[in-house]
Length: 305
Image 1 (cartoon, helix red, strand yellow):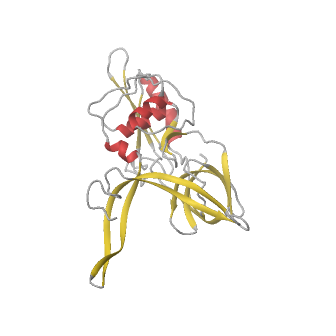
Image 2: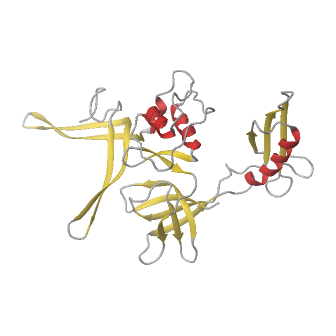
């Protein structure tokens, strides 16, 4: 079974693998739960074991290592020949299906595509841009279909609790600075003269300050958030909006928490869960799940902003 040619089984040239988990409980209860459809992106190692018996060589089996990626990997590799726009602006879902060539599962209301949505080279980025029209993020579902995950938090899907009868094993908190800014830079143009409009606002005190009192860079340095809009057409409007935008982007908008839980194949990225460690409780949304063949899994969540 070790692949040696383009068309062989497990070769990284169009081979897809559907993964599922068999759940067994009690007497005779068995349920198959889909975990995802993936494409083989690489076979970094394929080893065939043979043994000699009575003068003949026999196969002792193959060990094939495969690197799997979700079906969006294929969409991203299939780039546009030239920049363009959607030929039909009537439906976000219809256009996403055309671009991906994959089945669609509708989870949020459809909408027409604004004429301002244009494609460059990356086809997957175009899919994400289309999803943004309906305030959602494009994602793959376990059955291999494309869906749109709403950016607005949905209803709570489950409770993850510690203690007797619970599935929560460990809680670890993490913080990151990649979405915390201390300066806003707005770029636009004057609607009358066409002259450039540039407005800035920055944090002047506290740990997120851009500069120290003596004018030197602060330990956090300058981390600008860039914004442009065709509606900010004069200096006063741009200055005012920079001041409004600064408090929004200069705060810790979410805290990342890593949970070690008992294996649960029913949870998925985007689910909202109520996490109940001993002595506390908080609402969170799943952003990543790492599973192995062990009894536990690592679930990364962000708390409500």
